[in-house]
Amino acid sequence: MYRGRLKRDLDLWASQGIIRTDAAEAMLAEYDARKSAFSIGTVLTMLAAVLLSASIAMVIAANWETIPRLARIVAVLAMIWIFHLGAALAVARGFVRLAGALLVLGAASFGGAIALVGQLYHLSGDAVQAALLWFAMTMLSAALFRSIALTTMAGILLWSILVAVIDQSNFNWSAGYAGILVLSAMLLSALIAWTKAIHVQHFVYLLVLALLFWRYVANGGEGTALTIALVALLLFLAATLRASPLSPIAARIGPALPFYSLAACMMGLLFLHVDFDGDGLASVVLAVVTLGVAVLALVVSGRDNGAVRALAYACFSAEILYLSYETIDSMLETSGFFFISGFVLAALAFIAIRLEKLFSARAAERRGARP
Image (cartoon, rainbow, N blue to C red; front, side, top):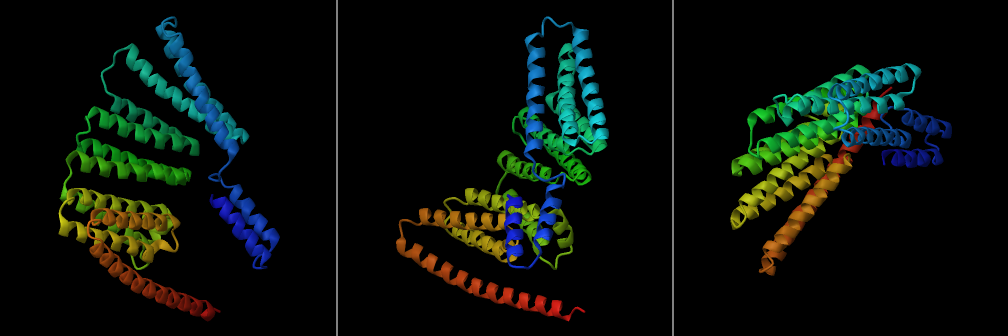
């Protein structure tokens, strides 16, 4: 998606004479050469690795009873070493995609070894411990090989830990398990920075949203929902306002942080809608606050962040539809609310346009003042 937009922009700028055609082609070639750029060959290689992992597991399972115990263990351990040594050889020869596929096969074999040893020798433990061990070894291998493919697999395994935790705790909130998940997410974030697998950070953000949802559903209330909304809103403002000391850090992290912080804020407001359902005055105040947060997000970050803009539009529209449903019995009150909201938004739009023009003029003056 980004490559398509980049190519269209480069072609447009080249046709307008802003940049040379050879410069546009060089920029696009540089993007395609990046390790994180999309490649259909890489995707097909990873899919082949996943299918081969599944086939190995099915072959072992189909002949489970006929394979001696020692042979099973030796075979699985041999696969782990063969795949990792093969990956090291592929890296030395420059076959990065093949190395990634072999590493995925090796990590999958290690997961199979954990299950096999635990089942054969009836070792004490639980699914959470097994998932954590698998996750830790995959992280270690990804760090040693600086592998984007294994970092992606670690992101998937992080969610397997969450599933195991929820299943083992019967969806009851556990601060200990939550702490383990947060620590695992922090370690994965550090690995992402090391391997430059930026796309895997979405697994971390989504895990945080899942933890917030789990916390509210398991042991929530108005206080929990309000805390989620306020903390997330403060994080969103800290990541987007230029005056914030966290703004440079957020700029390096990328546009995902403002989007997911706004999503967490809207999640908290949704929880408050559930808590205040049926309370007329509280629902009206909450609706105004939700609309205000959506407009604030558009003003602060809507121009530069398309994901934030889309989320703010969606939340604003959903809140309007919700109000229409709740007040459908009084069309006069609904029309009055829409009139006031429209008037306020028109005033905000006027102020935002004036501010954008002022900022643009100041930026132009600064560029003209430079030697």
